[in-house]
Amino acid sequence: MGNRLSKIYTRTGDKGTTGLGDGTRVDKDSARVAAYGTVDELNSTIGVLLSHALAEPMRRRLEEIQHDLFELGGELCIPGHTMIKASQVTALETYLDALNQDLPPLKDFILPGGGPAAAACHVARTVCRRAERRVVTLAHSEQVSEDSLAYLNRLSDLLFVMARVLARAEGGSEVLWDRERFKQPS
Image (cartoon, rainbow, N blue to C red; front, side):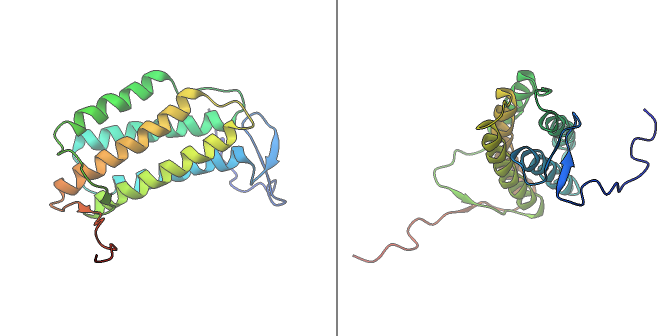
C-alpha cells in the first residue's frame, strides 16, 4: 500500500472544499461530507466507549462495529459505492436480541446515565441517531444504500440495549423518566 498519508496537510481544503474518494471536490458543508463526518464522529465515540472496562464479547462486537463504520464512511465518501451489506444489519439484530433477552421489559423511558461506560454508550447512541439523520438528508438528493440506513438505525437500537446492560454491569441503575413530575395538582 505504501505511505498513503506521508503528508498530513495538503492545503487543498483551505478554501472550504474537500476531495471525495472519487476525486470530486465538494464544499465541506455538503450533505455528503456531513454524513460521513458524523459517521466518523460516531466511530470516535465508540472509541471512547472502548476505553472503559467492558466484557470481552461486547468489546469484540464494538471493535467489529468500528470497522463497519469505517467502511460506511468510505461508502459515503465515494458516490455510488456500497460496502455495507444486509448481513451486517442481521449481525447487529442477532446480537441485539441476545443482549435484550435478559433485560427487564421497559415500561417507561429511561434517562441517559447508569455509570461511566453506560453514559458513554448513550452518547454514542445519540451520535448514531444524528449520523442516521445526516444520511437520510443525503438520501433526499443522492443515492444511498438502504442497508446503510438500516445499519445505522439498528446500531442505535443496539447501543441503547448495550447501555442498559452496561448500567447493570457497572452496578448502576436506570433512572426512569418521572412523567408525574410536572403534573399540576387537581
